[in-house]
Image (tube, rainbow, N blue to C red; front, side, top):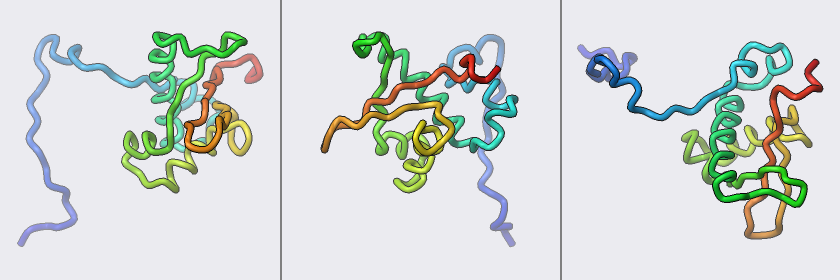
Length: 131
C-alpha cells in the first residue's frame, strides 16, 4: 500500500565542481530575515520584495526614472500571481503588506489610470529611519 501523505520524490544529481555557479538567483536581503523591524512581515512578502529588487535592475537598464531620479518598476498583480504561483487575492494581500498605505512601507504604488499598471517605487529597506 502506497503512502499518499509522502510527496512524489524525484531523484536529483549532486553538484560537482563549479556547476553551482551556472544559475542565477534572486536575493532576499538578510536584514529582512534578521531585523526586529520586519518580524511581522510574511515570508512570501519578503520573497516578493526580493523579486522587486531584482526587477529594479531592468528598470535601470531601461532608464525608468521619474523627474526626481527615483527608480520605479512595473509589477502587475498578474505577474505576482505567476511568479509566486498564487491567486489574485493573495497577490493583492502581499502587495498591500509591503505598501506604504496599508503595510510596512517598503514600496509605494502610484496608480496611472484604468488599464495601466501602477508605478511601484521600491524603498530602501536599510533606510535611516530604522536606526
